[in-house]
Figure 1 (cartoon, rainbow, N blue to C red):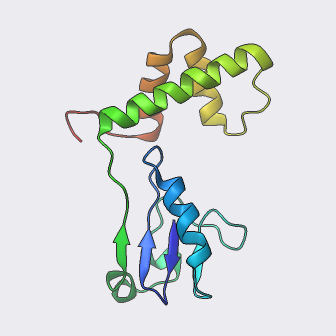
Figure 2 (cartoon, rainbow, N blue to C red; figure 1 turned 60 degrees about the horizontal axis):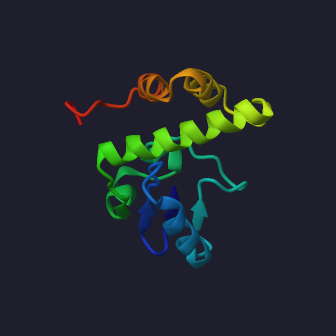
Length: 133
């Protein structure tokens, strides 16, 4: 997430939607009132509410908020590619490089069945399926 109170915007980065490029463009433009959630200065919870960001509801409602939408099927295909790539890396090098325990489990499942690993990833994160999205 990128938040800049002086410029009155909040960019919410959803994984696998191209947000890294937008983050790369916006970070150098931040004013002294702005911060980047992935940076060392501040930790922002993944599902932060306005009060966790130090904002009142009125301040938050006054911001221009945006994100990038990508159809669910494309997001799943992208995650499946990453799972397959990481499973191949684990086969070759071991899993010591994977820091996140949840991702380690997804890739472990993906070693035998990448599609099942994708289902597992969706389940542990509580993400919707196509019917409810």
